[in-house]
Image 1 (cartoon, one colour):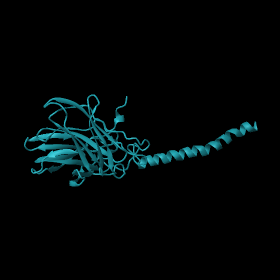
Image 2 (cartoon, rainbow, N blue to C red):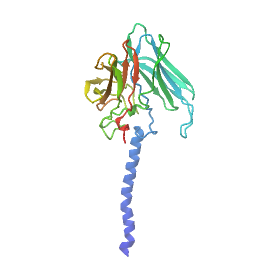
Image 3 (cartoon, rainbow, N blue to C red):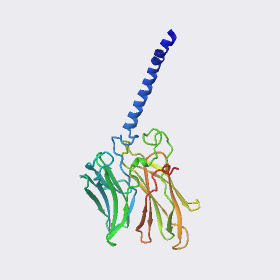
Image 4 (cartoon, one colour):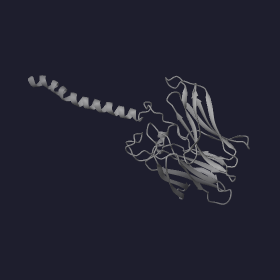
Length: 299
């Protein structure tokens, strides 16, 4: 009887330290995940959308637009939006920037006119939102000779952390799996008299409180059978952009199916895009990745 009477208390006394240790570890894990923005919605640092590089011809106008969303999302009512818009060149220099402060429903644009003396220039649009309302960005390229918008671009990803190439030790969604999760492009059909440009931009701003870091990796162009038609590598400091040009094989005006490929090494956040240039050098087509991470294609 004595043993039966004491045993439950003894077991409870032994369990209390174990339960306390589990509770403390759980609280510590939640604090770490919250501080470093691993748990969505708990990050105290904005995770900005990421745009890929855009090629703009002389006399064209590129416009970075932002709209403050005017409707309730879940249980959250609309609220004001504030932040900064900017354009970088291929070396990471900010060539134009402006802050925005918008009420729900309002929009504004930052515009940059490329001088007519310039044949072509690479521009990287950038938006750094502050915490608050939901700022929805877009990019347009207006051609004054054509008298219309010739390119329209949404962000390559709504969150920069979606471009997952973080090594072990950098807290992110990939911190517990150091293997890069590359962006993926689908099959695209181009003419043999067009030029394909594969652009890589190394993001130059903090993501979830983490400072920018260098980017490196490999690019490839496959044909429809999987054969590698072009291979290259990139090593970029934050803010830098590199473009790889590829002329499809075949007789003039024949159609060729190709699959671009980007394999980032662990490190910085590299944002890719594909441009198809016509014979006059203008961008006829702009393609963002089909997904920022290959693992998004899971059955």
